[in-house]
Length: 374
Image (cartoon, rainbow, N blue to C red):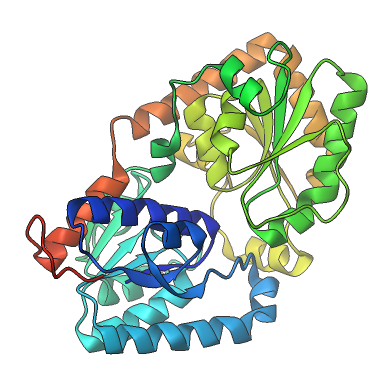
């Protein structure tokens, strides 16, 4: 059983499911996810929630509780060989309690950000989970003294990057001019993120078109998400082509999240921005104990890319940083050099394949096992 609570986790669940099917063709997989997991043969109990922050979670509480009930019931009735939890901590920790009571082994793939806030969850997770598979190298140290086995497997976004296509081919396939430069603006993958950021990204796009008309603006979105205000006609919107859009970009403005790591691995200089509700931001300021919010800066231990949060995440500020990245060559080169260090950290790792192996080890499956259930 795989439990993925939101968009990026659902993508990792789909990639993992593909690897499981390749290693054990008759494996049965069910759980919480979305269309990409379903396409990989997963039987869905309920869809992902797209919940963003603290105040947003309150508004979705009934749906979350209903989904937890469905998942808990299926867990007990179908007794999978392994329960795989992907991030989404409050929901998944509750599910882990049910699994522990039922004697079902639990693998936590993609650790909650316990190093950033609510560190008390570390002990709770260690009591409920059999093994952690973490995406970031420093997360191993977080669990080192808990007695919980923890392995750094790398980040699955690295598996999505295809270096074979040329910029010209990518631009032509997206219907944009192969001879003109591109700036991408990524508003996020969750519906609530897009609602918070959409007016800002349109303002940024319009500033670029007005002051740097030779540059094409591309807005990558994921399937199932939409912009709720009209996008100017000369702005290109693409779906499920984030990696390709980034690969032909000269610069990008990225909503903080997994996409910042994708951008770093591709080597595109960026500015990171983010907005949440005032309540979520206020509570977050009280609870969060990290200096940076972007994975690029967190992994680097210093500011490699500029972060613009809440009021600072204005169209004027985002545009000014994009303009500097494009026009200030020494600044641009320094940032790209910083991104190279991120590439080195994730080099040669195949997380989806490794996590599939871990599941097989935990379940004591043999190669080609025809009775595997997860």
